[in-house]
Length: 146
Image (cartoon, rainbow, N blue to C red):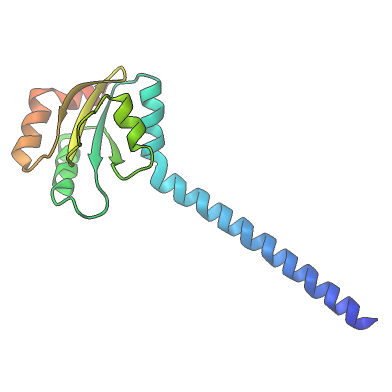
């Protein structure tokens, strides 16, 4: 009779371990999706709400040589923006919403007013190009509007 009690106790411990494991995995997935999916979800929500914003399209796979240069310049100029990875599952929805019917060359910066493209620049190759775009289109003031 004691062997059955031991077996039952081991079964209960295994069940508790499985429940704790599933709980830890679920919490971990929530943190991962919140960390890497925030801008993507914010962009979609902002488009549906027809908000004004600046979107920096990038490719986080490492194949974009000038993306970090553009990101640094946006930060140095004080531009508030959303970073959006073109490899995201939601990229096709964003392209459709913004009526981008061509291949988007990264890095790209799009200025969105009330859910529609106001200004954009794609395939940025040097710092002077992005700096000129920011200054000529007054992107800093636009991006910091409430």
